[in-house]
Image 1 (cartoon, rainbow, N blue to C red):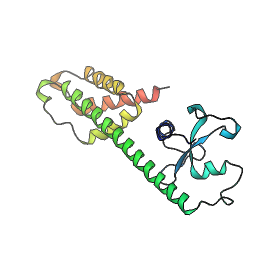
Image 2: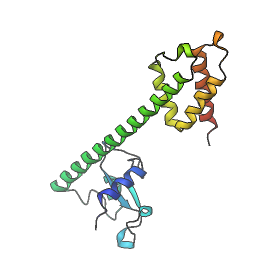
Image 3: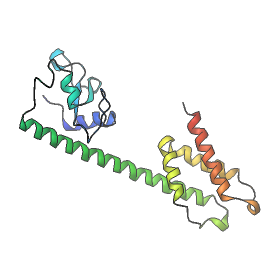
Image 4: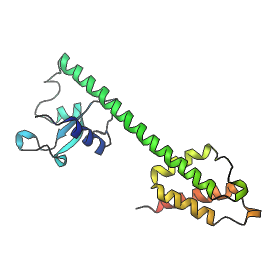
Length: 183
């Protein structure tokens, strides 16, 4: 009995859509789910016994090489269809991650503006800073980035001498220190 599509996708997601043997990813390869302990030797379909494997590695792991078992036309069609489905699933997953990240960036920009002195609260958050926020949000939890914003604003000088670019620089330093100090 084959591993179901839902289980396959969960294994792919867990393994970050990467062959656990060679490190290749779609669209360059077709991914499959491999049984660490083959079914023929009593291995089950539990997630602990399943890993993401590319077609080549999965077949190479068997008793015969790919040269001895060339795929037929229908197998090649199945592989190409599976590759397209995996590429689409990866694309959808990455788009969802990008949307989630964009929400976090907007929340951070709003938090930054909210903490500004009153006469600057309506200022536009510069677009070039979105990239920096994305980098920080990929390496730190959103709550840590929000804390860094609060820390930077608490350390700013009085309103008369307040320098917004210097506060941004301080915020970036706080984030980089959090990244460096992370376990």
